[in-house]
Image (cartoon, rainbow, N blue to C red):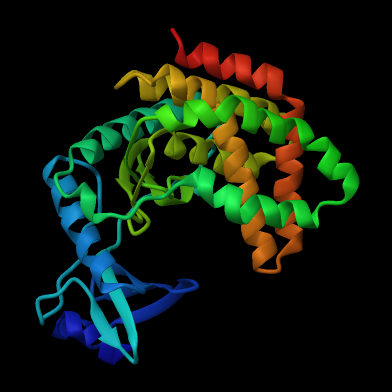
Length: 310
């Protein structure tokens, strides 16, 4: 890996490398720290680089890709493509108590500000589209149905019928734009209680705007799900997240109607993904989350619509 890092300059010749998780390393070069990531597509890297530079110019809290000595925002090594970012000091959102109301409000407001700038990005057409409904319909749901025992298929019948009856038409009218698509606590860095950085823009796509809000909701729920008390506090988190978002820009009525069903689709997508990779334990866990959400449907639907439609 030393030969790889030297492509960013001689100061990396004796850098220390620590593996963080699959395909991601922490790099220490003297007194400076960086994050090295494995990538897969040069075109996507260029698009991410241009987007990050544009967002930074609009005062978004993002960490920009670094150029190599060859003048590219990536390096090639043993057939792989790698990118390097400055390390952002602070505390990851997944290490904080996300259910505190102030964190939820700040996250919602930060996402709304990010969405405003993403909507104005002049090269949005360079990014591919992400159709959640299609992903679930043609991949995840058939996989999940094939896995479920008959009693669970029956338990989710209302969910399936509700999606078919209440989501299909509103889904077509949902606001679409560039979205982060991986907006969860682990991709947020806080310092002194304030948001310091939003990380990992390599999954940016054109999709329904409300996806990012719903994805944050599901990520926080799965993180606290096994604690019954924290599970109850999640309701307030969702309300405060939405309130924070709407303090910057309003959500549409179609987003209020679709919000809970988008959460269902995300959970079904998680289950299908884990089944596809052979991880039945995580598939079962996400199924339990989905079944619990279905049990809370009427209360959650009223709470969410009341929070959005004011």
